Amino acid sequence: MGGVRGVRIFVFLDTNILIRIATQGKPGCEQERWRELHKLVADSRVTIIVPEIVRLEFEKFHDRFLSDFHKKLEKFGANVKALVEDEKPYWNEMTDLLGSFRQAVGSSWGTMKTEKVADCQHGCQIIERWFRDGNFQDAPFSERVLLRAKQWLVAGRVPPSKDPANDERTKCERLLDGDNDLCIIESLIAMFEQSGTADAELLFCTENIPDFGLEAVGDGEPILHPKLRDGLPKTKLFTNLGSLVQFVHDNHPVEEPKPEDVERALQAEAARPAYDGPTTVQYEFGRLANPNKFITTTTPPPDDNMVWVPVLGGWQQFRRGSLEHIQAMKNAILLEENTGKRLGD
Image (cartoon, rainbow, N blue to C red; front, side, top):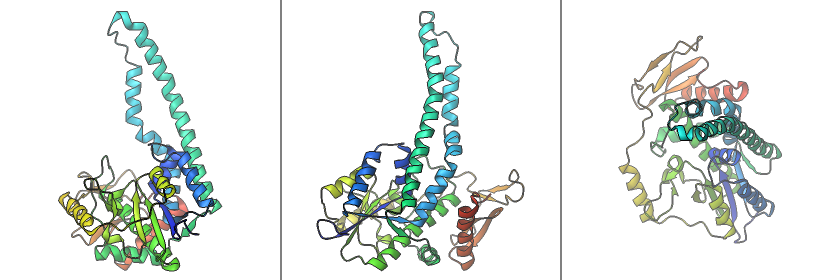
């Protein structure tokens, strides 16, 4: 595989991008762009890399989609219900209009939810069928990948976590997701160790720039975080599929960021306060046989080297990067993959 410029162009799509393609919840990853990307693959213009951990994350999303859909929309649905059941006259001259409006909203809301669920389920099936067809470069989630990702964590080669809007995850959940991000990077590095990076370019598409890179400063562009660059080819970040596909069509080369741009972005990152997770119920521990009885604590681990890890039946504390920590994380991932049990349940 080689692009028209004589370089090998690889594309990585983060889990959130695949979810966006499936749900069409926001613009930028339309199905038409998905088809255009596959045309580029068919024409040997690009190769898509799919780390195994991304497949596992997407399958988890699909398994939980229906329950999460109703849970996330519960509050909005309550507002719709209150609107429909509001029988205040407001103005006698418009009673018929308000009545017709409430009736239309009440009937259409249920229909729209049903149609959206069906569309999303169909979108998820498209992605999972693509997983089965295997028209991509696989990047396995091996024990070596997991171990090296933990070594990165111990060495501090992790971009600082920032507070994204509307993030409701606990600190433990963010730690788990951060570990997954490192495993993604290490999976890509392991693949490029086999294929080489000299004539390669990586187009890295994610909605979560702070997890992997530095936010754009001024009129600049987001760039891969310097802590994550070793072992990867020249890399360009994208936040949606449309801009990535257009970049390939335009035959642009991936250029290394200027040192002064990296320095400006690092200074901007340092000026933002690091995110330490929600302030309420950051940790759950002791949720054993009875899931309705558990101890909650906002007390962090005794030092930064200690982390909470979900285990079968609850949560347990480990020293970060220890062999016990690595084994517990591996067990947790295998448990969820093989049984479908939610971590910490």
